[in-house]
Length: 205
Image (cartoon, rainbow, N blue to C red; front, side, top):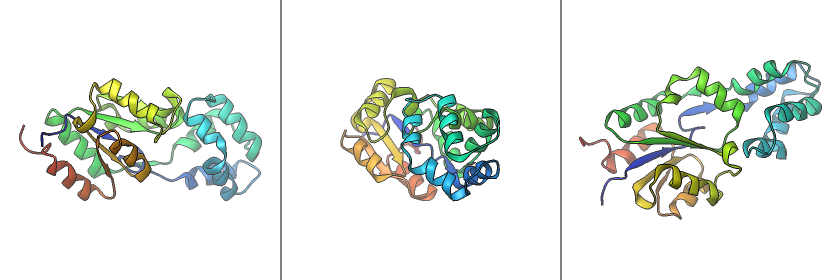
C-alpha cells in the first residue's frame, strides 16, 4: 500500500492534555457555586456545544456562565481561567516536528472554541507548525458530524487512504474510517509513533 499523503491530528488529549477541573476551581473561587458545579455546567450543559459550534460568541458564553455561577470577575479574567487548562504532550509535538522535517503535511482537526485556540496559539509555539486547521467553532459542526470531515477533505485536497487520522475518541475515528481514511484511536505516543512508522511516513522519503 502507498504511503498516506498527510497526517490529521486531533488536538485535545493528542497534542495537548487538558483538565476542566482547573477552570472549575478558579471560576468557583470568584463565584457563588462549587468547583464541581462549575465543571458540571461547563461539561454537561448544551452551552459548550453551542460555543464549540460557533452558535454563541465569547461574550455570550461568558454571560451565560456568569449567570449560572455568579462569577464576579471580568471577561478577561474568565477567559484566562477558562482557557489556561492545557499542557503540551511533548512526544506527540516532537512527532509532528519530525513529520514536518520529512516534508509530510500535517493538520489539526479539533472540536474546540475560540478562547481555547487563542490561548494555545499564544502559549504553545508548536501550534503554528501545521499546514492548516479545521476547528469546529469556525464551521458550525463538531466531530463526528460528516460535514466537518468534508471540510478536512476540501482544505487538504485529499481523501480516502491519502489521509492518516489520529484521535482519542473512537466515534470520531469511526467517522473517518467510514470515509476510507486510515483512522486510528490514539492511546499513547509510543503506540501512535509505531502506527505512523508502519505507514511508511518515518522512513526516508
